Amino acid sequence: VIHGSEIDLKLDSVIPPNITTDDANFFTHSAFRVLIGADPPTAFQFMKVSEAEFPALNGQGVSYAVLQFPSGSLNPSHRHPHSAELLFLLIGSLKVGFVDANDVLHTQTLQAGDLFIFPVGVVHYQYNYGRDLAFAISAFGSANVRTIPTPGLSKRLPSLAR
Image 1 (cartoon, rainbow, N blue to C red):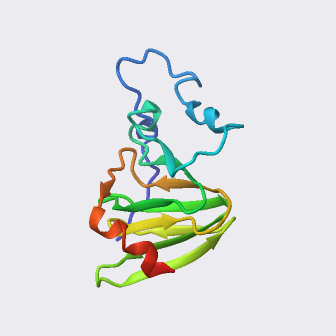
Image 2 (image 1 turned 90 degrees about the vertical axis):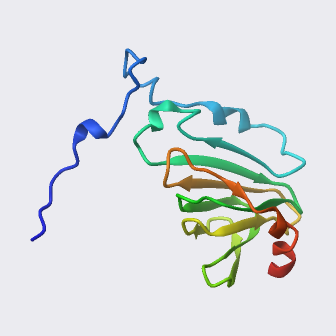
């Protein structure tokens, strides 16, 4: 027998005890404003927002990152042991890939408007092979996503994906 019920609404937001108000300011984070109109970076750059930077994410099971890839730049191979990553490519093109549990490399060439999912825990990378800036947003299924680099693969993966 399966019983369905509403999620406990008290769990929708976990407001820390040191916060005395739960007005809209608590639920607003404006750190990404610095990206609007800014000059493009000269090397791969990312900006993340997790529970540490945005306490309103506490208990929500989500976090976010903005990734900027100048031409020829690489987000080196890494993994997130407890979270999937959903990448949305807004501008440019990227080669992306991950290694599955059977050591099979899965690659894809993404164009602006594409979504790509990196499953929980897989070693993965993104590489801008194009001439123009690539700009992506990643959403994670954790408010405290951990990133573990895999340095030995960083040099090999883009050449395998070409």
